[in-house]
Length: 336
Image 1 (cartoon, helix red, strand yellow):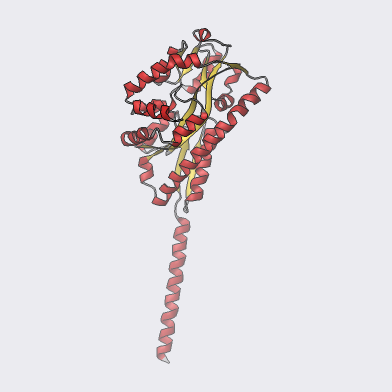
Image 2: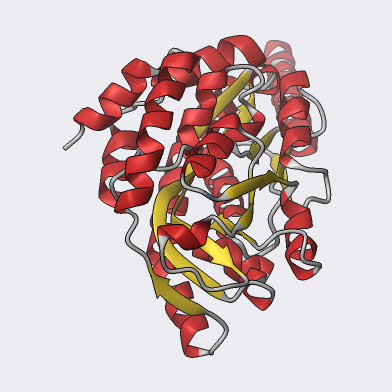
């Protein structure tokens, strides 16, 4: 009888300890601090880049079975894209962001090719090129040199000239003073077409057009609508000179500190969010143009870009040789 009581006491003690341990374990899991991630875009809330980053955040939370908090900053409240990229290199302040290739060219000049004018025939050619991984060598070199990983590509909008005055011929282009990104490829290419290119920070463009410093810019429809460039530059010259290509990047330093399951979720979510952003922007492109035209806010001007291409392409070929990107250009040209 005594042995039975001893056995019962030991059994009860074991159950109590097990229950207590389970409670403590459950409490520890519940009290685990969430991983905090910060994303940024220079463009305003509602722009497809901001929506794409928000969708990326949703997918990460969906694929990661753990606590994570993701803050998306927009409208340049954490700085400009140059700042985002440098933060990601250091592994501080910004963990992921949409960044123009021009800001990466300091570390690998070939990155300029990601957004080069006149290398894509049309949207279908661009989509096939991305699917074929034509920029893979650039991505790998950029990761090695900067510690910033490209998860995928946003973009998909066809870019046109957005000007405060109407132009219809190649001769007219010689009168245009136009904002371009600071990348040498943009400056040289547009110079070859007769346009006078002027590098300016993106957030200064609206006022620069309004005050007469420049005549306009080149951009896709979604940004024109969100930034209201049509208010100061209502003529959209359908030059169709390139397709917007904007990498979504992630800090490798930060990525390496995260749990393996979260890293996998980020890589998967990045590819899917990029595809969503491309599909969304390309599908909305013509809708934005039509809506603004119907509202009387813009005038669409047809433009034969064949002469622009003829003048620009030798510059692109020379630039590819200068950068050591002939193989990338050749691969782009080989895509049917």
